[in-house]
Picture 1 (tube, one colour):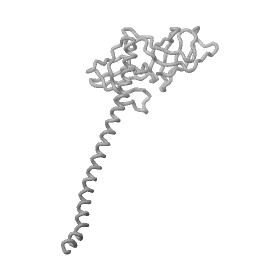
Picture 2: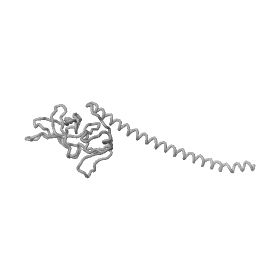
Picture 3: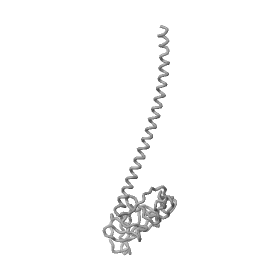
Length: 212
């Protein structure tokens, strides 16, 4: 009886010690699972980013491949100050990667800008939206020639060189090209006409263009 009573009295103590031990193991398992979950979530996010970058790069290569451009891939690492009147970005490729001033800069949709300043591992890019930006363009299809100017926004202004030319909303503009392909290689998509100014008596016809 005494033995049974002693065993019965100690049972709650043994159970308590066992529960505490299991609780510690359970907490360790929970912490380990949380860490594994965070690791998997991080890998999934990195995979999504990599897939998006791969998709963008494929489109750029497709665009460049049609015209047999040589492409150096790069990422944007900073954007020009909003307080500045200039519209610029900085990319993580420079002279060490074969980048030189006055090279054409494209993304998967078309023209982005032109290389202005080059450093060993980075380059400063002047964007098409910069107010000082000018590029000779052709209207895809009709081959009419004009000058496209940046306005500090995502829209530019096109001025046709021939006042007898006709242009309409939806027309696509491509780069006319430069001597020795610097700063612009020919045929790169630049933007789409969104509105046309057909003012009577105007010397030249103008249009608003949404940059690609």
